[in-house]
Length: 264
Image 1 (cartoon, rainbow, N blue to C red):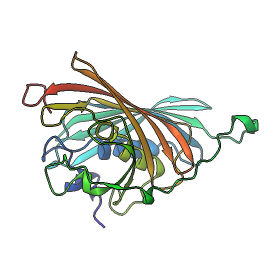
Image 2: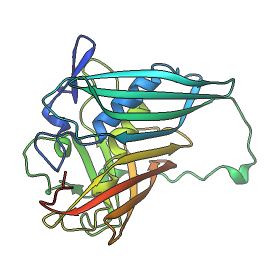
Image 3: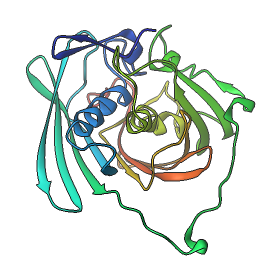
Image 4: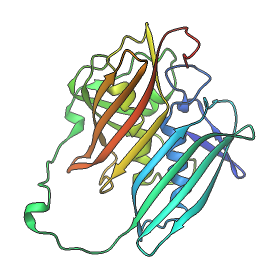
């Protein structure tokens, strides 16, 4: 099965599955974010460390046609907390940067009243979403399976479930954290409330906080947009899996009329 990225030595070559909605030549934010999470996980073994926060800054548009390289460094090494920075490079320059916080896993017994009740769900019973605002036949919108729980895409807020149909990197399993990052950047589209024919609303960053990792492939995005006449917007979303909440996601938007200098 074709992945989002293929190995080329230490470089990762994007496939057309990474295409985003704003340009056929530029990547959606989800796959690069998941690559940065992958780089951080390599320094924080999942058996010991839980990814509590990962913030991605998108420094410039990320092309589909250029191979990528990731680096990660430990910035904080404590007994209970790790801090990590990761960078994604394209054409020899950084295109995205991540700051991550991992917390040591340890058994802890909580009072029953503080343990959330499970909320079993079956997303496959919900209607499918096709993200028709993507103008091309192949891209992120075809690589992800999406189901609508409530609301309407393009008239947010809305609630949708997403899962990847493809591995992130060829020949590798996609970790739960990577699955979350692949889906979480889509809160910009799931919660969209502006007409894409008139406006662009590119997110400049993505912050994800997780109190636990998803148990299955599906990630639920309950996304609410907050556009402002200043050209600034926020999208806030609750993240869940089939058992209940797993965390929160937040994005800052750069809103512009289509064709203006800030578009894309």
